[in-house]
Image (cartoon, rainbow, N blue to C red; front, side, top):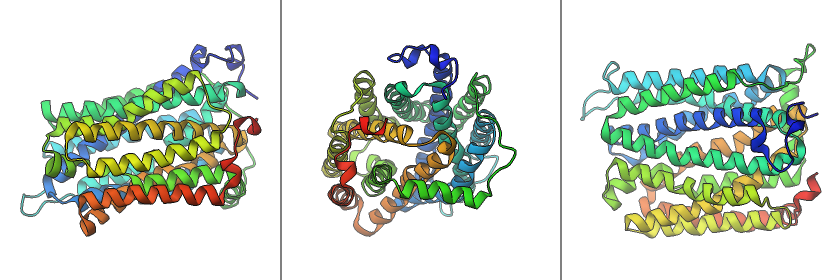
Length: 420
């Protein structure tokens, strides 16, 4: 059942719900903190090593602990107070940023130019992977408690806008802070934002389901979530489509190398390029929040991911900064459609008692694909070179769309009204 404060909101206006606004504050502050760290770490590591493969290792350092933690994070979100778990996770982000402040300030040595020591940075990123495993499941579980079901589609659109807005502002702020004040100040800003997110979720007023005194065994509970997802063709198809598209078509992790070796810009340019995909997603998210898609949602999802692959190919072939920025902007437009549709499918198709576990599985599909994609991109860049690696990834993304259309016909024919 939706919480009592949600029922007072107009079905067409989720922004009239105070609980939802508090949840959005938690979401954007965590994203800003994470993104400032991400852009600063990428610049920091490449500055030390000048090796694209080292950028891929950033993703690997985060995804391994994330992958190991996520299934248990989903179980805990389904069985413990979600708001308190979110508060602890936010404080974990603050701890990670504080470690990186110490590294950037020289309190923890990174070696010399001839023999750089990047392991302290990778260790801090590994802690980020553990913490991040809780952030998405907490948000998705609380989302269904602060909004009634008939606001899910519009709420998913607004949530996508906030998410993408964080992806726009975070890298931009990080790039400006690196160029203006240095890496230590950028990391310190991320720490402050993480503390702000902890306060936002800590004071959130929401009716949570009662804590279960008799809990199902951990692994049996996790298996139940996996069986639900893998037995749901529409949900599984949407998650797999997004996962492989991000895994194979991601180019963001290589932006420090593109900026330095091909486009000849500084850290401010890196912030601009990292923000472009999210800017495109914000634009389309604002449109979809007002006009949420229902009919032909499956076909729209497939076309959006195919368009994403085409944009990545264009970015890989471009040698001009603003043309590259344009292709990344268009990739964000396509990705924004995918994010809204996938989020809506996830909320409509998932029972409330399983939201933590299903959200964690979604994180394994989507969240881990970003970091695995970074490792894949770094490895392919070493094998093929920067441009061939990105172009090849774009073509592979389009191939994934074709395979998904054939293997998941229910997703291809999806009308969102079928999930109500």
